[in-house]
Image 1 (cartoon, rainbow, N blue to C red):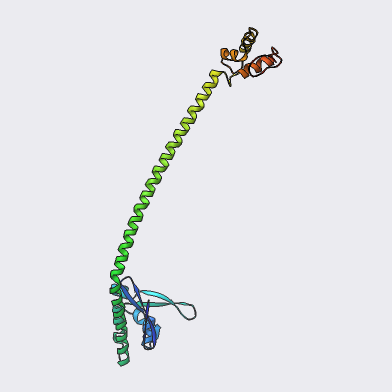
Image 2 (image 1 turned 90 degrees about the vertical axis):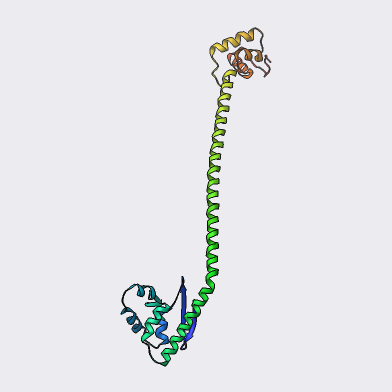
Length: 230
């Protein structure tokens, strides 16, 4: 927003898109008109496309802090509005407004190439960011797929190892209840002079299991880990 002094009044000009606007309030102040009269004059204009494009209705905050209606005026809107303002002073003020519009539009034309380049640069940056976003999403998808596959393989490996361990234990006689028949065989083999390790191999049991059950059976009073009474 830029300001110019016309008839000792601060007049604001605002650029929105490619259009420059002043306000009905500033026009009223410069031309010593009541703002309510300016508003009434604009409201009496035909409600057509020209009116809509050149007199957009807005609000401003007055000195009391209250919001009141106000119109923004384009160059064409301003020219139509002040067409009936006569007198030498009104003529000078019209010229000052037109000069201000010219300066604002000249600044806009000078800045336009820079703005276009900036817009193009931003569009290119957004395009690259979108590409990076897609790559990141693709990488994330692949990462989670690989992670899922790795976890699946690890679970299979753990399960396979668990089953193998269980089978090994079964073969070695571990984890399976020591039957009465096995105990009788162990007692007979022990009485034949075989030690714990030899009995364990014959019964597919551990030496510790053989020794423990022989002791519980009362065949031996105590034992060591290598087989034999102490």
